[in-house]
Length: 253
Picture (cartoon, rainbow, N blue to C red):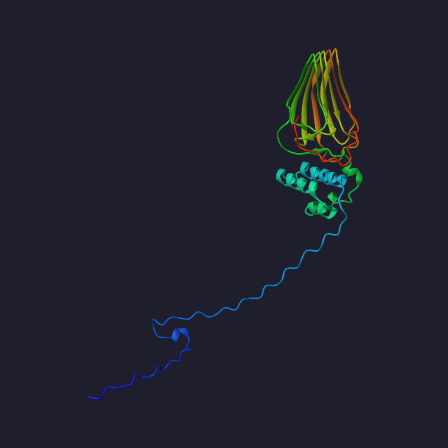
């Protein structure tokens, strides 16, 4: 018999052989992965646009309102952008709110398109008194109050005054049912609101003295319906009382 070899045969495969040729069971060492360099992100250009005024903020909200009424913005988008407009510091921040809207909503749009009541805002939501009743007495709603989308005014040997010039509307269409019986109801609206009157008077007066010549496309609509029996209902347009630059809230009366 041939004698056994005293020394083990040296490995025929060097340590650096490919993993597929290594002996079974021999662990495969992971190959180091070199990190890829990350390209630096460019810093946004500084906003050098002029500081925004209160009138410009309210003007931006008017444009957003028109976009909401036309269906270009949903309720959540309108609310969010309106809040951003109210807190904008520069005109550049305001104009960024319109980058995805048609060019007609740009800051340089014709003035007649956006003519309306300063500060008149549609802010969807609930709240506001739905019924105003005056029985041998008087009721006034004026200043910064929220007008519900639908409400009723009733006057019996008394008077009701609803002044919408500084109010916040709850929707693009507001409906007021006015009933006057031996009493009077007065509804005051600012320029820029379109009024649709459909009431009548019996031994009384139903008087619509509004004009919507200044109402832009997509302006809020006020619908007044009802009747006056031995009483009177008067709807008229008046300019706002010293409200330039006002930032309306969402309070309710």
